[in-house]
Length: 460
Image (cartoon, rainbow, N blue to C red; front, side, top):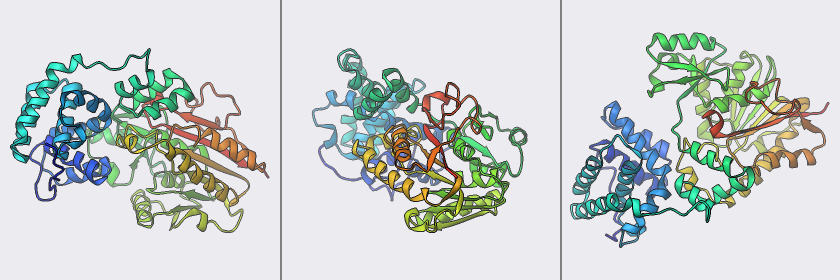
């Protein structure tokens, strides 16, 4: 079983939901693919029915999300180290153990039998091994004990809630054990699909009524006045309201960023690191599509994404340019408002991208913080006196958030914090002082993404 032979995924189509999930897991592990993109691509080329699509999706995200816990239980059952197994065998064992541990609706015998059948199709000699390991897991799983909370809290939480130890330690040190564990738990909850109403075209109530008329169950967001949560899983791209540009997909926390900037009609607004255009188009909608939103992104191929969203939503006030914002921003004081949704470690969106937590190392935070610092100093000079700069990230790491802003203000006395309360919902700012100019949103608070938002003003 020590061979590293690769399975040719390009010449064989998935027969079942589990086959498809296995193919995606292999793409993620052996080719470095992003789970969401690999899964979307695989589903696009399958004939699975909606129920099997749901199972495949659950298996991919669940197996990746619970990876270290699954490996912890598998390791004592193997004579050959897990990493030395053939790639497809290792991942077949993982996705089956995920079912046995976390999916009550799947009978154990059915999950194991299906795994054995897959093994027979992919390498008959491995089927007996797969069968033996999985049946051994059923017999011995209760005998495999996790570390105690009292003796090693970090390791226990890491294994119980499936996160790297360094990440658990970071949140424990910063926010305390209760909050750290709550973050980990929330990161394992599947996110709902959230739409943002195109407020330039209709109201949220009107969108809700259109969805209801189309037989789609949905309800209003309590986080953003522009948000709508779908109560069922479906392909949003097939919704008439989406196709007609009446809404777009965006997380509730992310919607708060443009609200925090609160741009007005006729303004010239700079949106840095703008792709794929969710916040860009929200800015334009809040401005009544009057003025200019100048969107910049370093990736040239992503500029088309911004224009595609703008065209679908019927927005004319957006211009876009590819390039490093540090090179694009030239003449000082040329923008009324600036949004810097900075590149970050992404620790606030793990529930959407579970593979992210296994690909990060502690040094990544310091590295990305250096880029954030550079970007902040660069764009600061492009803001007119009296103008507003909003800095945001989709992470939960103080070095990239509160500490970043504190350092910036210490180095830039021409800037000061500007209160967020007039611009964000009362629930978001509950408990904050009236002059609070930043907010950290945790994923467990509203079942939305973890986000940090700070509002700064350049003194006149």
